[in-house]
Image (cartoon, rainbow, N blue to C red; front, side, top):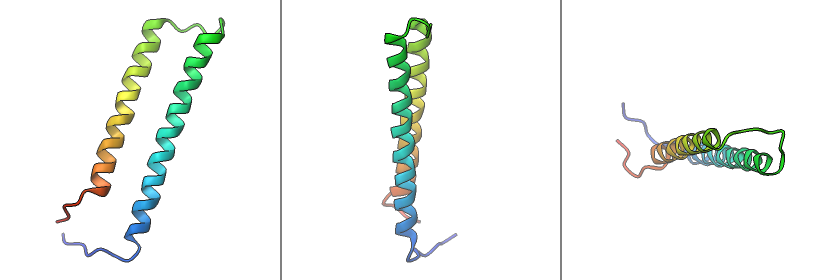
Length: 79
């Protein structure tokens, strides 16, 4: 299906880019809070293995999603 670029398409891309940026920023804030509580609060008992697994896998997923979405939204090749 051939879709001609519309006038407001740049606005859609900009809005989606802002949403992606805010999502990634919020995720990083949550990761920082988790690490902060793990470091200073003895009641926040999270084993090292769980923390490493949780942060490593979710960070990889967020970065992967970010790359996929940004590549899709801003790819130069349009068919």
